[in-house]
Length: 352
Image (cartoon, rainbow, N blue to C red; front, side):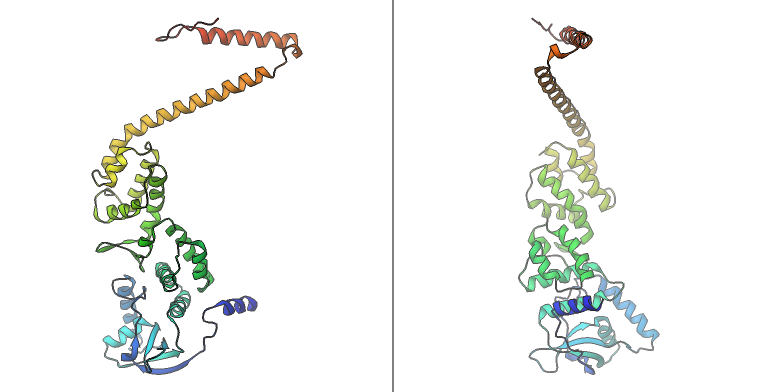
């Protein structure tokens, strides 16, 4: 275990981190990172929830903030500090008229180190929003000009974060690899920005297999991702139930429709909703199934035909016993009589 901890420490971007000092600092000297997805207004619904919880906890402690916040010194502005941990405590102290707050003051850190530090601190909390972690990994990649959709770039970014967190985030990154960069870059703490609103990350997980079907089976390009997000957010295409269920129902229908069927375009253009799609697709899917069954039957017959011919070509009739020869000839005669018999609606087949 000690050896493992040593390896983690040696590979960390914060390997040279010192304990810093505990001191009381002016709240006005604190700088909040504008791109922190876990706290900034408009980027996380978690912010309002945490404010209420922290207020309740502090009130129960007689308005005493027991745990110091964590800050790091500004590299050039003396007496200014970047806030790393304790946004809710600072917010509560400000609202209650406090001018100073206890803090652990660390040495100056660059922007990526600050992202990694706050996620290491967050990762030690048992209840923390994993989508905040995802947003911070994406942010760290942007700072380093790396693309989280690229396997090697993602691995390089994730090396800086705690292994347990990296493993969890990597699963989400595998989903995002299917999505265009312009959409991935819009991922915030709780959702993806779409127009004037957002769509929760878990909807991306549901939309991904649907988008892949539309691409592979129906020949659509990357535009399908933006199209699906717009339909889910602003249209009525997915109405008729919970989004998760309607997305899965649409996926089921599109996987059965014939390739490039006109119903696909009608749905994606918003001309028909899911209910209408389901109704109109029934006869189309039934016809497609009949066609596939017939095609499968024909293929099976062709395989049997070739197999029989190959078997006959390789058969040494004289090597068979008299009984085997009689059985074979009788079976061939029966099949010849059956296959050459007239059928209703067919012309009689002439067999020489």
